[in-house]
Length: 119
Image 1: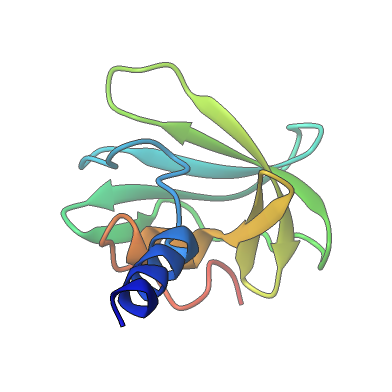
Image 2: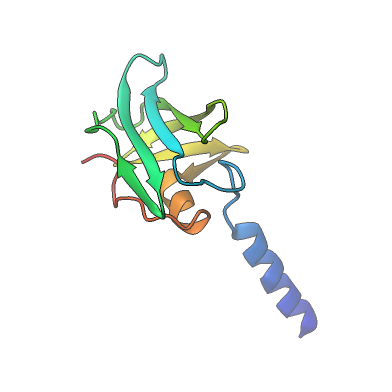
């Protein structure tokens, strides 16, 4: 019985999403979604409290388009994360897996992002 409980806890821990974007996203953190060549700004958002507020109207990327997510924590240099656009969300590449940006923001960072990043 103990082995079963241990295996359940181990499975839950392995299934948890990683803090891919860093340990925390403090207020003032900005996220910018850009085309792969960095010429098109598809959207920009800022963390305010527990909300993710848009800074500009989104320019929807094509479904399946490769994109770059730039993350700028207050007082730090921006970091780039490769991803793929998918129906109002971005799938970030992490250890040969794709992780939903919206799910990551909700479940790991406790933010309240919009239901979709673009219509």
